[in-house]
Amino acid sequence: MTLIDREAVNNSSISYRESPGITPAALGELFRSSGIKRPVDDETRLAMMLKHANLIFGAFDGDRLVGVARALTDFSYCCYLSDLAVAREYQKLGIGRTLIEHVKRRIGNRSMLLLLSSPDAMTYYPTVGLEPVTNGWIIKRVS
Image 1 (tube, rainbow, N blue to C red):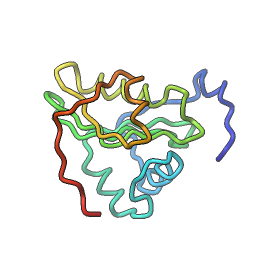
Image 2 (cartoon, one colour):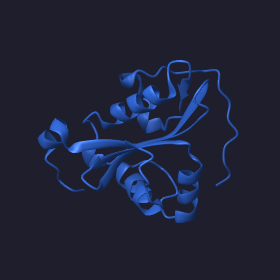
Image 3 (cartoon, rainbow, N blue to C red):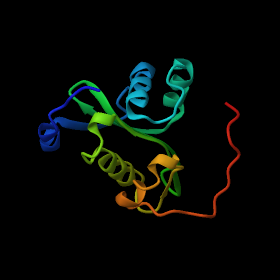
Image 4 (cartoon, rainbow, N blue to C red):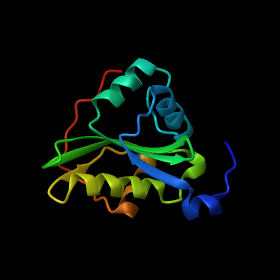
C-alpha cells in the first residue's frame, strides 16, 4: 500500500469526472487495491463492464484512478449502482460518499438508487444515506 498525505487529499487533490475513459487495466488495479471482489485479471470482462455501464464517475488523484462509481440506469426511474470502489489508502476520506452524491445528482430525484453490498461493506452504506431493503430477489451469476 502506498503512503499518501491524507491531509493533502482531504483538502482538494481529488477530482471527479463523469465518463472518464477508464481503461480495463486501471479498473482492475483499482478493484485490486480497493479489496472489492471483481474479475481483476479478466481485462476482456472488465472492458465489457465499462462499455455497457451507462453512468461512470471516476475519482482521481492527479492521473491515478482512486475511486469509481459504475452504474446502469434509465435516468428516470431506477439506477443500479453496480460498483463503488475506493483504493484502500484513500478510504475514509469521503470519496465514496462524493461518488454516490455525483450519481444521485446525475440521475435526479425521481430515480431510485439500488445496490448490492458485499458483507464487508454492510455497515458503510447506512452512513452515506442508503437504507436496507428486504423485498429483493436474485439469480446469482455462475462465474
